[in-house]
Image (cartoon, rainbow, N blue to C red; front, side, top):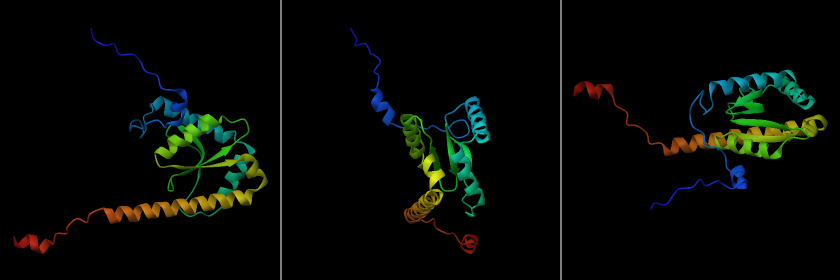
Length: 174
């Protein structure tokens, strides 16, 4: 007789620590169009009914001149809705409200970081009480991310082999 295969379940603690694998499908993610539309509608509702901390930080971002680095409020990134997202930097800011599910938040952060998006978590209390300190943290995070991107770009340029250039005059004589 042959051995029967049985279903093997992973340990739930192990499953919570691993980020889901991303496959390119449906606007760049493995998410159905229907699910993405629902996420965008949910983000729209979140923008309409934001918390006080979110409104305060959004107001400061609106007044700040950050050049080409802008933060979009309640942005859909993959299957997650982040409080603020800077696409150019690949950076997301999440506001930690009281009573929030930490396990879900950590899993979401891990899946975002798996695709190269750095997540910065800030307590809502800190935003309301120490806005200047929070803005300094965000600025340092942005500078760090810019430096990382520049270093990665230089490394990519060094590692890529230059293609030989062909002179048109040489080709015409052949």
